[in-house]
Image (cartoon, rainbow, N blue to C red):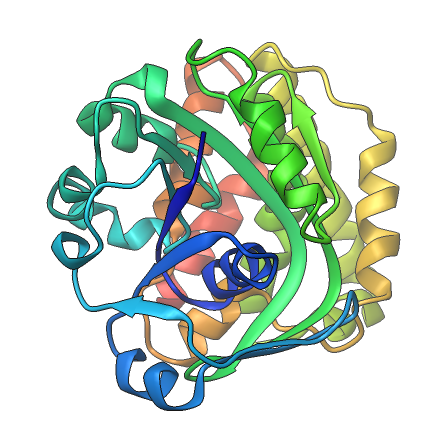
Length: 302
């Protein structure tokens, strides 16, 4: 099971979590676009709090057709690229291929399931600080835990199998019971920090936390995420609010991924992180004024 693995989305997340598997001997095939030539020449290099690694000759391919069918597809590109799933996924599938998404926000599993069938899909949340410094070069400065869950009933034990594979590759991994619940847990961080970093004009996490008024807004947004999750049937521990704030203080001057996209002129994952979760909260009958205001500010800034 999972003797061959394709990484779709070879940015910071894909290179790190794919690179860890390749470092430990797995057949990992990276779908590369602009970074193909640089990685072919220089390989993949990662500085990491959990141990640096360098892959001199990672398997890089320009197209999914060149990769061919694999046992496990890991989707790690931004949700803004999901329109290409219908083109990219089919050449990677055989009759038992499983698909794991590492993407932020809600709606990604559904987008994949529309192509593969829900029984092939798993979700994973990556609680990590990783930045791509240049083609094939990434820096892992904090965190790294992965939480894997089943989107719908599929092959028995597959989530636990992937967790064991990652654990052997120096990645702390847990198995969660619900994909959506796991996503709401991560939204406690993503909604305020990714959002306010943009809405406040390009502030890193240390600057956001240095302003007491902004910290109050962060807490208010986190409380609304907890309320939304509860309305959807996923009661989260309110202690996650303080835990997320304190762990963020240790990140120092960290640029959230949405801030990087915004500053570098790329499309921001507005729908997956703020839009779709807010719609689901509204459908559950709750009003979230801080979240609604933040979304309006992000849209205006973008």
